[in-house]
Image 1 (cartoon, helix red, strand yellow):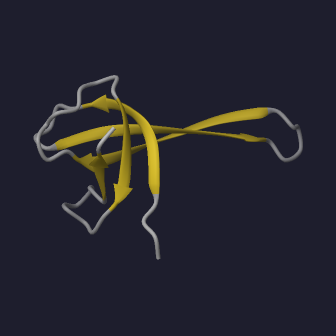
Image 2: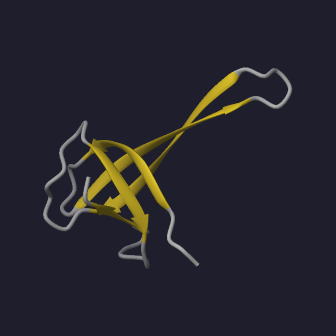
Length: 76
């Protein structure tokens, strides 16, 4: 099965080799037909600590690296 790839913005890089990435998705509400914005945060592995807050990055699924990290950053 292919690995999922998501695109989002780095919101935190305070931990070593870890960045927090906020992913936003937009969809129409089924009844009201209004566009709804939902966001979710993922913790991703950043091997070289090269990404800063505000960077747009792509993350990909990977085997668990820690208790909370199941994603890794791939090149911008």
